[in-house]
Every structure is written in structure tokens, then in C-alpha cells.
Amino acid sequence: MAHSFRCDCPITSALDVLGDKWTLVIVKQMLIDGKKTFKEFVEAEEAIATNILTDRLKKIEEKGIIKRLSLPENKKSKHYHLTEKGLGLTPVILEMAIWSDGNLRDLHPDLSTENPIEYIKLNKASFVSILQERYKERISQTQY
Amino acid sequence: MAHSFRCDCPITSALDVLGDKWTLVIVKQMLIDGKKTFKEFVEAEEAIATNILTDRLKKIEEKGIIKRLSLPENKKSKHYHLTEKGLGLTPVILEMAIWSDGNLRDLHPDLSTENPIEYIKLNKASFVSILQERYKERISQTQY
DNA sequence: TCTGTTCAGTTGCGTTTTGCAAGTAATGTT
DNA sequence: AACATTACTTGCAAAACGCAACTGAACAGA
Image (cartoon, rainbow over all chains, first blue to last red; front, top):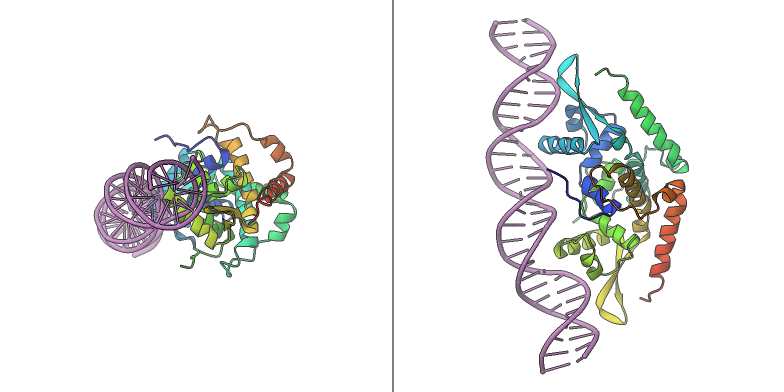
């Protein structure tokens, strides 16, 4: 089932792939929250339904954004990892965090304030690298 | 009908507002393609259905991302403008364009190549400003 | 080895959202 | 007066979503 794109615009095409309520939440849970397993995604505060999760994991794996890995010492659980293509979404996710911080508090007063948004804004590029390196460091600690 | 957010995470909250196939496409059509009227949105290559367009314009107006303006010399057509909150989405949209350019060509070989992506990447911040200033310049040329 | 539990899903089903086509009401044009 | 344009609304079928319950393989302890 090939993906069909609405047109040749890069922005519209990005939204053909990422434009739904869950895809980028899953990527964020992996990148920022360090989640790797089906169970961890289901138990996150966003509370995704299991059938939706299965569907999204399959779709973004098909698109090369994540990889599914079996653990040699444990045949029950599987690990999901971001690929380079998925890690490439770090700037998009960071810009969303910055936009929320500056523009969503009127609609959502309880929005988290714990992230170092001012620090991120001062040097976005280095924060992108920090997150990506931290992620790679984290996944390199498990044998597959 | 108050908007309900899944949790207090800024990224998830951004996706509660922006996470669908059309919202950011409409913002992009205004910011990049210079579209202002219902007719212009409908006639764009993305081909949004009129009922969906009406719904999205209403929702993002309620959230303060756009403003609807009546023209004094023309009571038939209306103009939709990005607010500062809407203009604040420029970095998100640019990062999506960059991601597509670097990561979507395998899935979408016909992806447009006309945008100066290399130039954007060299100095993102200045390109954000250029787009925002160009937009403000454009809308300042009509009296309301 | 039997029992229970955990993990990663699948299935069923009702609700919501989407997409397409057609229609409408107010305004503007000839 | 007749027609066209703009910004919608309505109806309906199809797809996506959300919830709860269920399954099946893999371990864990007795």
C-alpha cells in the first residue's frame, strides 16, 4: 500500500506523513521520554489505544522513521528505535515545544514549565545535537 | 466548546492543536503561498473540501491563530490573516520543509526542488524573519 | 509441569471525522 | 433582470478513531 501524497510541496508532504494526533507524539515519547516498548507507549500519560499504537508503529516503520528490534535474551518484548530519519525530526519537535511555550498558555494554563525553553531558544542547533546524541547513547547500551 | 488537552506536555499540546492533515497546510498556504480567501484555499493544489475548510478556519480562528476580516469595499469576500500566534508557526513549518527535503525523497521522488533549502539551512533564523516580514508587508497593503 | 502473569498485539463495535457532491444565500456584474 | 461569484451548508457514504474485551506466545514461580 504505497503512500499517496497530495502534491509536491515539501510542507504538505511532511503533513501527509506526520499530520495526525499520534505519529509525532510517539516519536517524542522515544526521543524525549526514552520510551522503547509497546507497554511503555501504552502506559504513557497520553494514553494511546493499543490498536492505534499498533497501526502507527507499523506505518512509521514502513516509512523508515523507526525500526523494530527483537531482543536475543528476551523473546517476549520488542524494542522500537528511531532511525536517522526519525532522529531528523528533532528540530520539528523542538520548534513545536517552543511554539507551545510561547503561544498555548492562554488556552492551556497548566502547560508544563519544567523544560529549559529559554536555554533551547538561545542555541537551538546545539540542543538538537544534544538530544540526538543522548538518544544514540541510550540505545547503544542494549545488545540486539 | 473548550479544547481539551491530553496532558501538560508542550509537544503533545501543540499536536492537540496542530495535529491533523489540514491545519498546518492552511497556515502554510497563507504564509508561503500568499493565500487569503476561502476561494484561494479551495483552488489550491491540495484541494481541501469546503466543509473541512470551513471547520478548520473556524477552529484556528477560535484558537487565535488566524483572524477573519471583512473588506469595506467588498462585502462578498473575506480575508483570513495570520495573527502573531500563527506567524509564530513559521519555524515549525520551515523545519518540516527541511525534513521533507532530506528525508522524504525516497517515498516521494517528485517532491519539489525549487525551494532554496540549502540557503534556509545556512541561516534558519534569518529566513524565519524574512518570511514573517514578507507576510506582514503583504497584508499591510490592504485596508480593512 | 501446572498456574498465573506479562507483553504485544487483535477483534468487535459504536462514535466521530472525512471526503465528495450538491445546494443555498448574499453580494456583485452585465 | 439575469447571471456569476463567494462563502458557506447539507446529506450521505466511507474511513478513522476510541474503548473494551480477548488471544497467544513467552516467561516466572511453586
